[in-house]
Image 1 (cartoon, one colour):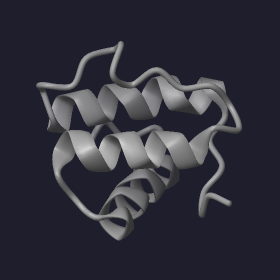
Image 2: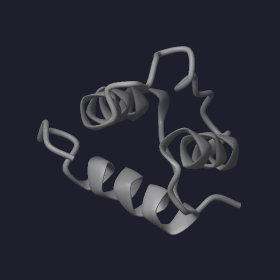
Image 3: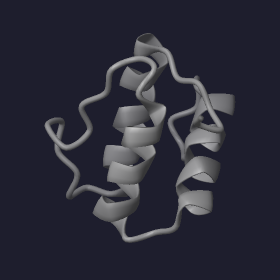
Image 4: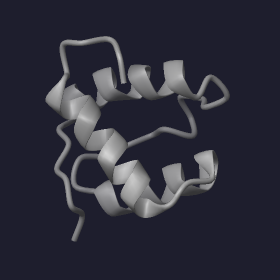
Length: 71
């Protein structure tokens, strides 16, 4: 069970933030279906070479400040 829950609407905004921070990430790499948070976290861990705690922290931070462009 994932530590977070992301709606498809929120994901579109979070994805933009991730792509700004990690400009090598593509839309194809960041495909997401609501309810598949665990596979998303695992994929991002591999793409940015970080541990699970960091990725979850980053995603939570992006969700808390959803209207802010910064990550």
